[in-house]
Length: 228
Ligand SMILES: [Fe+2]
Image 1 (cartoon, rainbow, N blue to C red):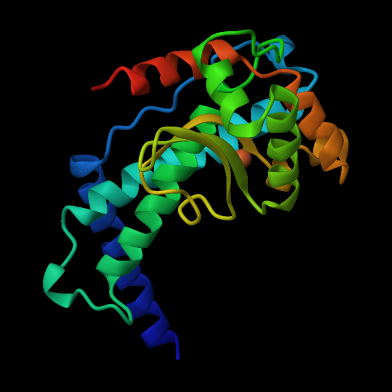
Image 2: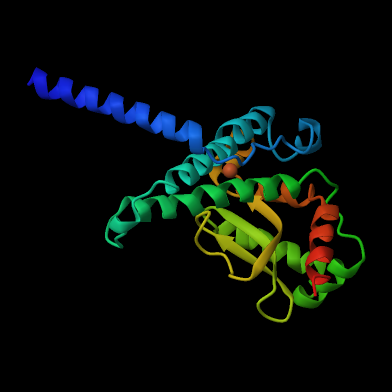
């Protein structure tokens, strides 16, 4: 028994070294972006430990794995691509899991740090037209976030007649509307709120909508609707 184990161990060491060298040469370069606000700006939505863990562990983990996967895809054996199982298929699946995980967290940070007031302009008119009123949007957004297992987003659905919608994504990479661009995003995985609110997701959501920074959503809305 010792011999096969030693051989396996050596083989693993060589494989590890090969992977490390490959990574050093080909590593993706998506940066871990800093939080766009000081903790005090979002203290009503999360406690200080979550502020740090969420960014330094969860979000950074997605960025790092996205970079690793991009590097590995450059040398993946395409001739073995297979829908039942292949390294290439697994890498492609985890590529969107990690890329979307990173981008959704960046949009989530961008959605916070304001006073929650929508004001009165083009996006406000759009939301009033699509939902009836800002309060009706808020009620629908919070209900959508209550039934989601991962994320909820206010999106601009460019595939129809430029409508705003609330959508849920149970996983980072499953459940979005193709052709829809996120304007406001909230994280409803437990790690985002349990340390401050416990299982009281409703209070977390109330704190979130009261802390939305609509200025950034409006900039995105303006950029998207002026594209043509
Ligand atoms: Fe998260």
